[in-house]
Length: 582
Image (cartoon, rainbow, N blue to C red; front, side):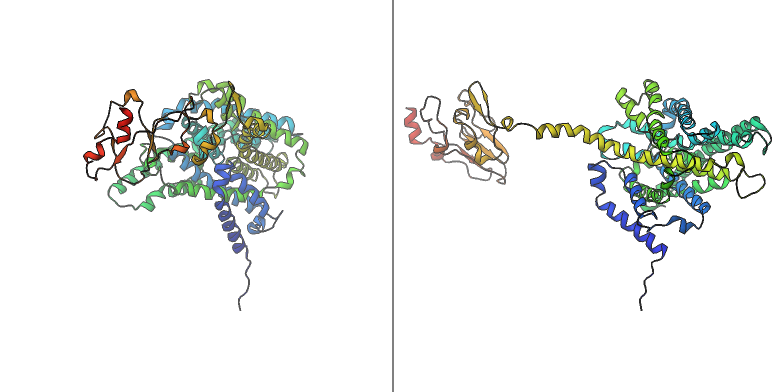
């Protein structure tokens, strides 16, 4: 006898597949017509399926403990960022990092440092009793711009019509590089917290050892090694794929999926050696297309956008389910009336003032309007969640006596960074996801209201020099009815419709010149399809200005190339016309 089996696996797969299918049915409408980001929609869907709503997706039950849930979220985020950053590197043109190193150095150097400092100052000022080193760590988590959320302004219909290509490329390059470069900012604060946070009681060495580790481990082992490792692997992968493709060793499916397998390999191997897998993936992706060969070969392929969409939808559904929504209101770190202004200040002043200050030195930014656009769209997303869980993992090491709880000076750091970083991610997804549709709505709303409130007299006939002018009807059958008598055409020249073209008889002065006609009374045309001869009946012919009826138009014959030539009788003018001419 059949039995129901509502296991966690069956429920999760059903919910995930059903949601992706439903979203796909209206995805074009939502993304291309309403300009809504898939991240925002998936985040709300994850919240709806979470234990706080429909209770269909229960992440904590699947993980078993809070520590396991944090590890799952960290690894899932690493996977998504690794794939996304390889694709971001592949999208850039040949030798882009080398050719555009000056504007990228400005964005990743002084501007990113200023973003870190201003964010940390806002956090330090609004969070009660927060040590400044803790504020530096929280600010480092939300400093990098997110490559996943940046897709809303570098891909799709809005980007194609409103964002120049050069600006799209510099946004992609910046968001890809600064994700991996968040490590120095974060570990500068974490090393200082470790060695001087409790006054040097638990760890000896002081600030000197902390700075030494920061230069040696963070910059040397984590950053430089990841750059070299990513560049070498990207070059080797490019040469191997090119070699095998030239000799027809690789099929099309394996060729297209090669970038994804490269991302998985780099993410796993960098994780094993403890280096920066995010930065290595971005460097490898750009070196992999250093000669533009792979990028041009896959330019019209839909596999990369498809995998991109699946990862984005899935990761933000997971975020919506695991986000500590209740902690925004009830926590021991910051009250809600301070948390909301903190989010507003960070979104407004974390990036915009510094882009406005330096935009004239960035050639891809053309004018103040583009500078405001790029300064405002610095989204906070997957990279912030990644650094959040890196911080939580580091806090567990600050336990000299191997106790269950970390030492006293970092006892609240986990809650502080979790509440603020999660809140900023939610704010960024909502604000940056709704900015474009709200901006479009505000642009078109005044026009719609103006047309709605227009008086009916504006749409009917109006007087010009004593003559009534009525808008012409689109229907050919109603033209004569809708057009006043004294405003109709008084031309006496006959009209011929051939296909979609109307040929009018030239003026009397120009009738002696015939171009391409076999005779003065014959028009040779091509195939018979779509040929329509239109003549005016005498009763529909307008009267002349003096009230007299116009003379009948001269007859014309339209012949086809496959017809016999005209006889002498056909070329001879009618008797009536001859008598009239006499």
